[in-house]
Image 1 (cartoon, rainbow over the protein chains, first blue to last red):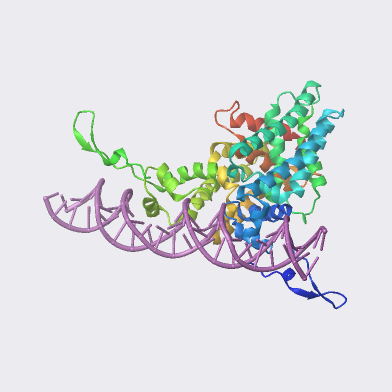
Image 2 (spheres, rainbow over the protein chains, first blue to last red):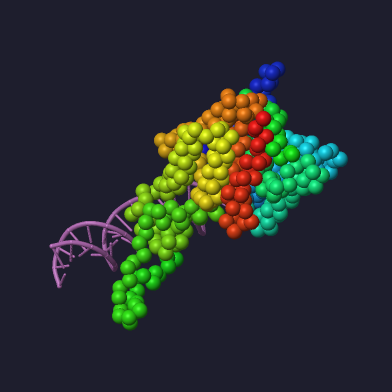
Length: 211
Length: 211
DNA sequence: TTTATATTCTACTATATGGTAGAATATGCT
DNA sequence: AGCATATTCTACCATATAGTAGAATATAAA
């Protein structure tokens, strides 16, 4: 079922000379990207390693030169999403901006991540139960820590009297994250609004947090 | 691996008489409930029919007397969630209440559904890609129709001048549904707040929709 | 008790798939 | 060119599991 790749054939180049084209080489990143899309579309369990290999124009055996097993591919996706998420949010929290502005930026950031890592995000919030061992525990902890950033911003706003004190910061965090992360269920890049525009509407919707 | 069920043995009843105990009978609903929990915890793809049968104290063969195949179990779950969701929301939309009150009730309803059908909801928003054929298409349509209810409420509120006109009703709907449905990722019945309390906080958060 | 029906169990098949070993091929260096 | 290394391919194994057939057992009615 593996595709016969052009790259294995001898081709004519621009000058008409026959040259052996470099074999299209597989990389970990390529595996991760292709897998993200397949996992998002068909699910981790329903995507076979043969599927992934075929999408890369290679065979299953080649995959195992770059990754230890199927779960490692999933691990790569989780690490990518976390890496893209954590740092920027941490920086927002550590600025001196007023809480409402911090929250605005946090929402913008979360929306942006959900939008442009769309397939990876879909996987991130859907296939966690396939992770096992220490890595699974690590993800749980890092997700909790990530939520804490949002909670901090909200607590700060409540302490300085600009956010409603009647809303539990944890619940508010879940609400905001749900709103933003849900993008992975509906967002399409070709849609009417940019992630920034969507984030702006979300901010407007939730200015109910302000007093 | 199948459990030997007590119900197959001859027991002594309270009066000391030996009686044949009724065999614990499997029903479609029992299969659906057990499967909901297993699917939510391990995923549809990673849950085998043997797993489900074992949780019911039966064998796989018995399952096939009540359902046609594995996908039908998933279909049952989807139908249950939709049945529990659609009607009450439709009634809210069709009342004469002011839009802001309609929206409050809609949020309350959505939160309640997400909370007390928790495993089923997890499955509902995670395993849709395992549905095939006409049923898959039906689900897509009914989900869209469901979103339309929310959009209607928001449009109505904007038309009567009580909701901000700058927010696209579709985006607002996605935001609100995301907020509520995200409960399936974190809600635990033994937690600090009731679904009603959570819904009240969500309503407060999003009163930014009001002018 | 007998009989018909409903329900479950046992044992099996066919298939898909994660993973592996070693051969084959490409690549880059000397 | 020749060699060592990196990378991919082919062919295979072992296992899990959806689904099936028919025997076995329970249930209810007469």
